[in-house]
Length: 307
Ligand code: GLU
Image (cartoon, rainbow, N blue to C red; front, side):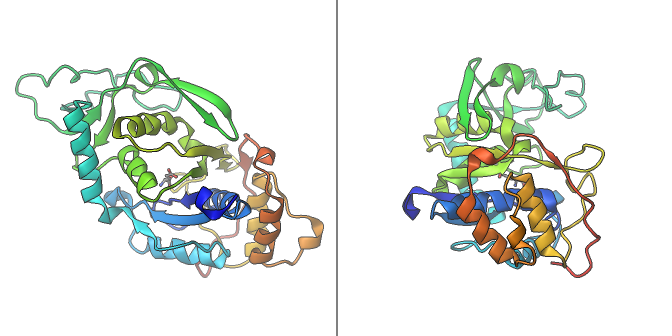
């Protein structure tokens, strides 16, 4: 495969430093790209301004460098891309594919939830706003059909967006563009061919495929890698107080990330640097060896000197 045939990316949200779970997504997307001789881009998904932490974007980039995860080209920053998202929303408006919604969080509190515990929008504003109601968000109207897609790790999947998600938000009540819209606009803008990311986003994929269809954008190939959980079985995240990657002992941490991806380093790599471990893993990378099951993290020591 030559480099034009593979463009991948890592798209962290700078809500805090990387933890073992986000490192696994970074390593998987890097290895898949490098094993194919492809390009690997980084996109800073700082769209949700209230959730972003000042300085986190820089820390993440320094952490990637410290692990030998070097990227190609300039980092794309979502907070500088509002114009592109506004244009996509305008296209959807012209198509009549979106409508304004006045529902508040509390009005939707009783709505049914899907297996990801997300609210399935019941369609209250689908046929027009109630008299006197004020538009808050924009939602895309979804069809009552199965969206089918292939994941390189999870196989053939399908989801009926109408039953399992409902009309979903593309512009939020606070005026910010939604992740689902930004991600498809940016994946197309960056000519991404392969999306390799955490399995927490597996069931976001049909929403993104549907937006790609509406906007006439190419569909990348998807692979969703296993999540890392804490001992209580919760996904490592800022909410579950996942520790940041430690500033020392990186080879041991990377070995854990590689094991989670079904590529535990061989004994001869004991004492190897992260760059040497990554070179070995890229040479031996087989996506079919990546497990579906999440892995429980070994306790990682508290960060001392980030990154
Ligand atoms: N920014 C998202 C996250 O950190 C990832 C988005 C993606 O890979 O599509 O969870």
